[in-house]
Length: 215
Image (cartoon, rainbow, N blue to C red; front, side, top):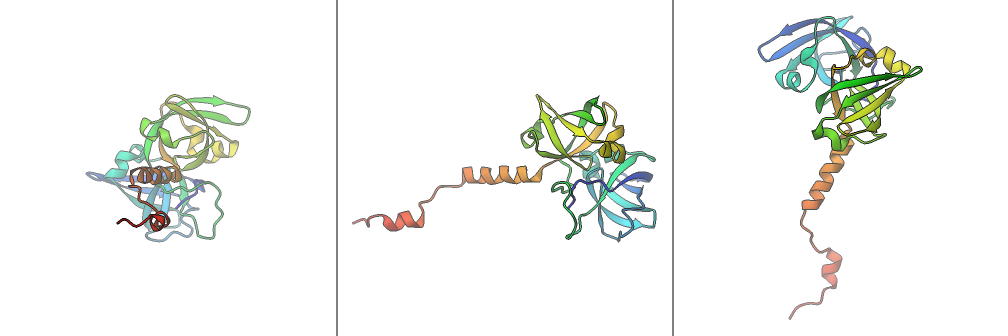
């Protein structure tokens, strides 16, 4: 589990392509300080498992499903990436509940610079639109953000100077593809209401006990 607070801006050091998979070697001196085999590290919002590491970098296996459903397949040697280690049980919960399970990708439509901040507008995939609400939480390339507005097929987020400087969102160009993870709580609520709507209604025990016995 993650919180969407990027710890380090890493770099892809090497890529080994397979028939339907890839091995990424990623430089991240901070996130490997306590890494071990099997540890989870989010790379651009995708939860990946460490298979090898040294003092400067770590390697992860990326399967076909992940390459298909995320933007990791477009990474090149030298690409910067957002990195976050899995949250410790006694850690500070700085962002929101992030699983590292990407729901889909989307494209940056526009950037509007402000005094010391920027507003970014993204396409809103129809399949995810019902989970995105104004002032709700969303994860973009592993960064926990607040939805500033929701339009017809679009949504915006506002980026403060720290986010612009310390994550890859600061250098995104119009047309770039990013990973999206919607708030998992919204999906659970939807499922609970859907189950309740289809569950047959049965009389309560109290109502049954008060019914007159039939002859």
